[in-house]
Amino acid sequence: AQKVTQAQTEISVVEKEDVTLDCVYETRDTTYYLFWYKQPPSGELVFLIRRNSFDEQNEISGRYSWNFQKSTSSFNFTITASQVVDSAVYFCALSAYSGGYQKVTFGIGTKLQVIP
Amino acid sequence: DVKVTQSSRYLVKRTGEKVFLECVQDMDHENMFWYRQDPGLGLRLIYFSYDVKMKEKGDIPEGYSVSREKKERFSLILESASTNQTSMYLCASSFPPTRRRGSYEQYFGPGTRLTVT
Image (cartoon, rainbow over all chains, first blue to last red; front, side):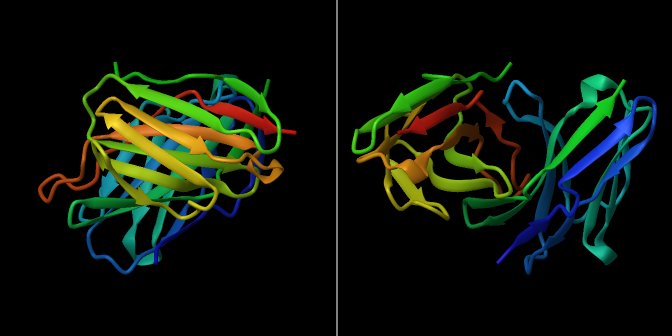
């Protein structure tokens, strides 16, 4: 069984603050993939990043960065200098490949509100 | 750009009605998925399909069925709608996983907010 825990259900920050969204996962598979998605108020989930279990390099994309630590089963997401447009629900997801099928498990999401 | 469209953004149905939710994708994806999203529960997989006419149950298939007659179209059917099926329904599609590249990201539609009264 696989599980994704996003312990922070709601976070509020003031614009320009940095914010980190936590994601902790559980899986028995040795090969797995982690994702982050953003769901703005319009409702459509947007893919942000994919990371496989063999690549523990951190990644930075503009104001976004991701910290993958296999030792703590965490895949945290940091937004630097937050902006109002970052207000959304963010989902962490875990996928394991199993003979042609992929079972994707989502966390419950973290609602981020950036206050101007 | 990948485009996943859903037939309705908002839908109101009465208890006992048969409800069809349609989803169409234009990226030739083999895999298609139906989720429901409820506050505090995140996204839960109802059904997915890995090929035309093929389907697999997800985590919460009870009360739902699906149809995939064409590669680009995946329909979710509520045979007899009930109030506990009031929810946001999200359709998604992706390429199938491969041994070399593993799992692909999913592309989502805008969602259908269904209210059953």
